[in-house]
Every structure is written in C-alpha cells, then in structure tokens.
Length: 151
Image (tube, rainbow, N blue to C red):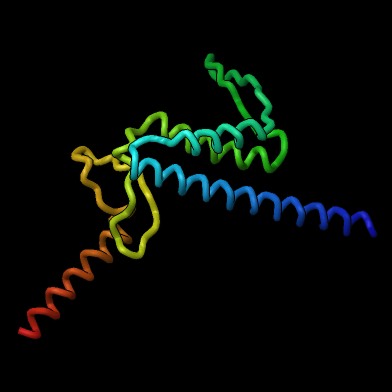
C-alpha cells in the first residue's frame, strides 16, 4: 500500500468514526429534549450518558490573554475530540443558561427542530417565523379560503 493510500484510508476511517459519534450525539440530544419535554429536567440515565461521553474526550487547556483579559481555551486534542467537545459545550451552555420551559419544539407539523424561546412573553411557536410560521399561517389562510368557497 502506498503512503497516500494509507493516508486516504485513515482519513476515511476518521470520517466514519466522527459520523458515528455525531449520530450517537444526535440520539443523546434527542433523549435530552425528550426528558426536558416530559419531565422538565434530565433523567439520571441521560446524565450518565453525558458523563460517560465527557470522560472519553481528551482536551487541551490553554491560557490566552487578550487586551488585559485572560481566557481559558479548551480544545480537543484530536479532530474527533475537538468536534464533539464544541457540540457538548454548546449543549451544556444552553442547559446552564436557559430555563427548560423555554426550550421548545417547533409547532409546525413537518418540522422536527427545537429552539430556545427568547420572546418576552414566552409564547413563541416556531423555530423560524420566516419558514415554519409563514408556512403554518399560509396553510391556515388557504384552508379558510377553501372552506369559504365551499359554502
């Protein structure tokens, strides 16, 4: 096997590993959202799954000083660890800074997305007004129009 073939094989193997990890993380995210919807908090099972995933990650801590401020930089040691860490960090930041009743599923029937409701009243219904909200309102309008024409 040539060196370029070995490198291509290793690159392809890494991509498949990352894809598998991302699919597992997506399933874990679905379980997190399910727990939030049903219980308003994470179950011990989901918490253990998160803990196990965190234990697998290898990260590097570095100190960065910028304009008299110091920042702790955390990066994965490998590409896999870096990608997974960034996603897990985002999940934890959201859970730490957002009330669980503000994490909602989009009300559009064909949408599977969730969003953080940042509206003042807490009554936001769609992940995006431009997409899902507009589709829903257009569908309701045409349904009313169709009903009137039948009458």
